[in-house]
Amino acid sequence: MLLPIIEIYEKLLDYFGYQNWWPASDDYEMLIGAILTQNTNWRNVEKALSFLKKPLDPISILNMEQSKLAELIKPSGYYNQKAERIIRFTRWLIDTFGSIKAIKENNQPNLRQKLLELKGIGPETADSMLVYAFDKPVFIIDAYTRRLFGRLGYPVPKSYEAFRLQIETALGEHFMLRICNEFHALIVKQAKCFCKAKPMCSGCPLNKNCRYYTDHQQAN
DNA sequence: CTCCAGGACAAGC
DNA sequence: GCTTGTCATGGA
Image (cartoon, rainbow, N blue to C red; front, top):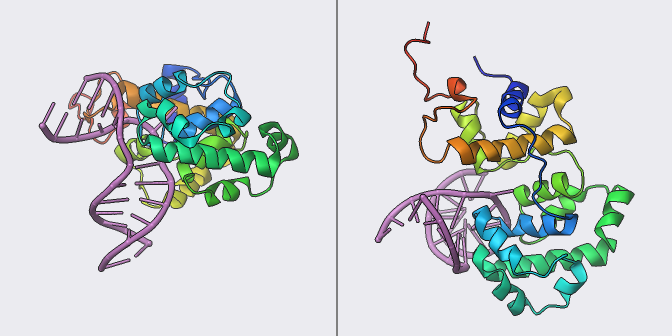
């Protein structure tokens, strides 16, 4: 009945292939992108990033006026709070660890908890950072994930943590960085290709597992 | 015109 | 605990 979670992953992978996320040229750009994409279309994030001087580096961001940064990232929306969040996060990163490299090499304990203590970094942003910049295994929950699993018939807890633990537990031996990394990217890819607004998405590799899929020829 | 997009937070209950 | 208002641009 319910498709085992790892089979969802396999079907998506077979159909779409490896996504090789995150779309950024280095770790710091990834971290900034994670904040910029909060409730925002990725196209707008790309536009915002294009106005920032690359390669992005923490020091030059910290040397910038917040109002100046806000102006540059305007296309991403919520630009005032995002500028504040980017600067606050970067300040914390440099003051606490010195560099991103230092975090990855020293295997910081409770990194997820520390990220969540920062104002402006919620569970999804923190988990994206952990998987795509800090190489820590976590199953990322987002709006697409909720919608997809809901349509596949799974219970979808409203609590982020409950949902995350449910999936991580169900993944069992498959719960590892590689899978977390690729799975989330595949879910986003699937959502962009098939699940815009309509429940019935012909061509989707998960179509026959979808609650809204009705095919009388196939029904037993 | 309305609605949504790879959320987070604070206030109110 | 859960629900609602707020933040904001750009494309469909």
